[in-house]
Amino acid sequence: MIFSIPNIITYFRVLVVPVFLFMYFSKDDYLISMSIVLYFFGAISDYFDGLIARKYNSSSKLGQFIDPLADKFIVIAALVAFNIQDIIPLWMVIVIILRDIITTIMRVIADKKNLDMETSKLAKWKTFSQFLFIGYVQTLIFVAHSSLFHISKSSANEFIYSDLTYYFMFALTAYTFLTLVDYIFKNKAIFK
Image 1: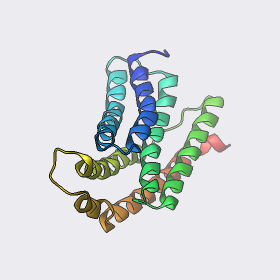
Image 2: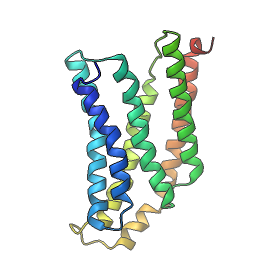
Image 3: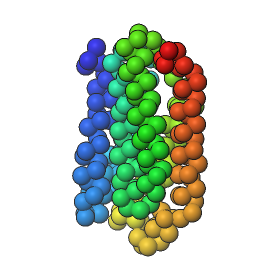
Image 4: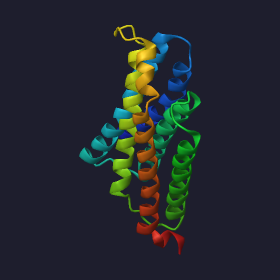
């Protein structure tokens, strides 16, 4: 069903991406802060669309395809934004984008061959870890741009551009690549 409640929540997550990017790259501190709040609503919606689909047995083939795609869009949007601001290196973003392209191609091939692609538990934790990392960085950015806190932008930037951020992202990139290897091994039938 195209307009089931879980699918509508997933569409919302896709629509969050351009609005988030527009607000995030504005020069206005208020819009930057609100972009981060919007992003959190988009990320949290990932939990609710799955919960509602399972509870009311309203899972669909379309939903199973667009849900991980929506996750990829929202994660990549934030990571590209962080790269543009030199918070994370480009090569890490490229590894994550390539992984997402390959797994999406695998899903399309599996669908054409009428095969079920086994979803990896590692991949579910990968998405959670990506949202956690993005949430960490965005919380710091929110603190830097919000008038609610009395912390200078330079103080917040020390945490944003820290070794902790780099190594957290490095570990996340390695873990993301590992999930690709796991997907390939668990779904070898797709390539036959």
